[in-house]
Amino acid sequence: MQSYALEYHKEELLHVLQEDEEEDHYSITINALTLLESSPWMGDILLTSPRNTLPLFDSALVAAQRTLLKVAETTDLTIKRNIHARVTRLPVCPELTRDVLPKTSDVGNFLSVTGTVIRATTIKLLDCEKEFVCNQCRHAFTVEADFEQYYSVCRPSKCPNEDCNNVSNFTVLAEQGSVPSHCRNYQELKMQEQVQRLGVGTIPRSMWVVLEDDLVDSCKPGDDVTISGVVLRRWKPVTVDSRCHIELVLKANQVQVTNEQRSNSLLTKDMVRESVETSLVPSLVFPSSVTYILYNKYHRKLSAFLYCVK
Image 1 (spheres, rainbow, N blue to C red):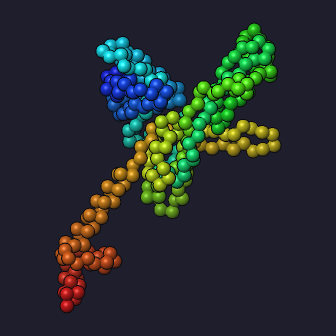
Image 2 (image 1 turned 30 degrees about the horizontal axis):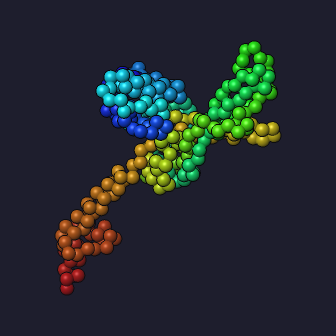
Image 3 (image 1 turned 45 degrees about the vertical axis):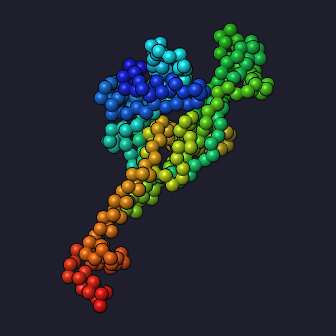
């Protein structure tokens, strides 16, 4: 992946290196078709195991920055560790691109889904990991938040120190006044299937989409979007005497707003209709209902015109 990034995204990486803010999040857009053509095995790994592969892509982009930094002629460049690979333009096939929302059988797959945003939550600051200290051996360690449990941090069940047998006595360092050091922007969208892409009488379904880091605030309710991401399950922590609610969620890797395509399409249709309606008499505009009846019937249009002139 590092060699691919240096070959196809060298200029983008140099632009990222020239940025001043080291803590900001940056993204490199990767064309899936180009990736599959240049390195089929790498594209296959991405599609079969995206949860493990995408973090490796991010690490490869950091390594590519180091390589460019070694041969750079200027010293005003800094490595950005918060850089992400955003995969777009998946091959158009039913296995990868969908107009309908994914189902349980798609869990773990990397898909491109088209829909309409109907709701967006406020942007939050997510604490994605916490530091614990063992009260018995004073060993400090980190526990990452679990995405599948709504990013809740489970209390450790055993001390990682092999010489310690503590299983319950731990303290969260944040509770002692320390400031969380690993936070990220977080937002959720509810995406609904587009009615015009469904069969007659089909009720559109909806699902939640998770946006993180630089993807937040990339779209708003009412936007038509194409989102690439990983289909996952999530559930709230299990409690006694309560039913476990499991839902499907799409963890976004790339968000593309397609409103412009829809506007261009509608504009073209309007222009065609206007051209047809005014083809005979440019100065006379008929109501749409009359135009529909008179469409492609020359003698009736001529009769209507003569009647209006009279």
